[in-house]
Amino acid sequence: MLTHAASAFGGQVSIADYIQHSATIGPGLDGLFALARSIDRRYESDLAVAEDEYVMVHGRFSGGGRPTKIVVDILRVEHGRLAEHWDVMQAEVTRSESKSGLPMFGDTFPDAGHGSLFRYPESFTKHAARFLSSDSESAAF
Image 1 (spheres, rainbow, N blue to C red):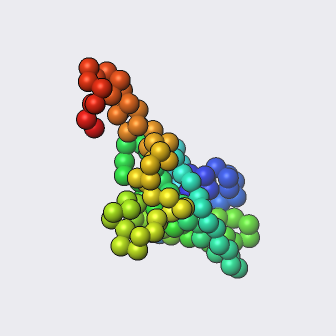
Image 2 (cartoon, rainbow, N blue to C red):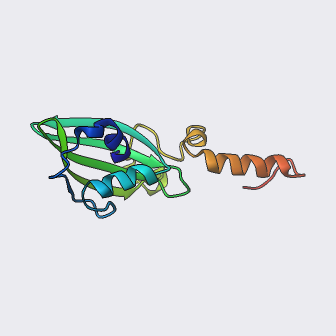
C-alpha cells in the first residue's frame, strides 16, 4: 500500500512532520521511500474507508517469494498531505485454516481452485514445469 501511496502522493507528503508507526518500515520519509524502492510484491486493495482526516485501506501483499499478508493501512492526511501511517498485518489463511469459513480478503480463498493459479504464478509455473518435464502422466505434486 505505501509503495503506491509514496508514488501517488509524491510531493504530497508532509516532509517535516511525517510520522511512521509501522514496525516494518523505517522512520520518516527515508523509511517510506526506502520501502517504496525495495518492494517487489503484488498489492491489491479491496476496501477503503475514510472519515475526517483518516483513511483505512484493506489490502493484500503477495508474491516476491514471501508468504501472502493481509494488511490494513491507516493513514492520516493533513492539508492534503500524507502525515502519519499505521498498519496491521497477518498471514493469509486457506479455507481449511479459517475458523470462520470465510476468506480474509475478497471473496475467494488462496487455495480456491484455478483462481489460486493466477494469484501464485511462481508456484503454478514451478508445478507446471515439473509436470511437463515428467516422464509419467501422473506426476505427483
